[in-house]
Image (cartoon, rainbow, N blue to C red):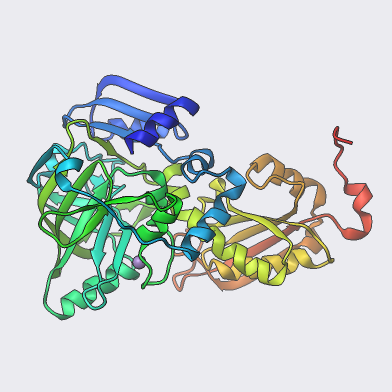
Length: 427
Ligand code: MN
């Protein structure tokens, strides 16, 4: 991560805070104040370790991590998930870390973000585990509440890690795992992609890294992890649950308390100069990491109906989850409506979507509003779909999780193109 951080500092604004900052609320206050900057905190009162946040809190930073530009991110994610690259390079644990000891989470600058939070949370931790039945590796990011110096509980949605744990539980066995904190944003992004259960997210990450990724073999568990700042080893216990939450989710609102699996740690590894990575809940780093990997699903579904789709963005204002802006090269009247229907069902959480022509920059909220202002006729261009399945995160959703979806066709009518043409200096 630190190599990337150096590159980042050359291009983007980095704020260094030298004064002592408390891990409880105070640090989060700074992160809230500078939502799009990279922040390094040199002195955290409760820990000897430095802290960084905002290494991938803008599309520009993520584009840099993926060696592309902002408009190219979705294609890059599609390419990596379709072409995972096996990892063959390994680095020894001894060469990767200076300190190896019994796990003690009180040494790390783990933040408590908001007043009603259930406690201090690790928010950038990637859990690596192997399927007890097939041996396929999984890497996924989970929020983890600290229960003690070597105990955590993690929010596990019913996907791959959940299935692995259930399979281990059926055998009355713990699920061995490793938790990696502080990695290159491309690796982090790979762990949030929705690949099938038989695909290893670390091989997706290796595609992002052009096949040059190295893994570190753990000491006590039979697992390999990406290069990281801090490595924790342990297991997810069978038949044991703890209260997880409350904690803030994507929509800047509190998620409910649930009973979630308990993790017990034994080993901890780090370097003398390791930096702890904190992701602000509901901050742009959280939103982009969770939302960007959903853009390819929408793109693919739209492309099936309108092959001239140009790009898709789950916009930051829509929490990178509830709103999509989609640009197309319109060829037939009605393309806009077909795009909306495909998009609203491709990503079930999508609530509102706006379709624009390719002269609109979907990464610019003002440009999107310009299209709505000048190209939308309310009685003709808006599609309302009540009673559709929506997002559990949508505060407007009914208890049965249905909501009303809206599509807005902000494309120019093909029979009056000259009336809608934007002035330009280039011709
Ligand atoms: Mn997986």
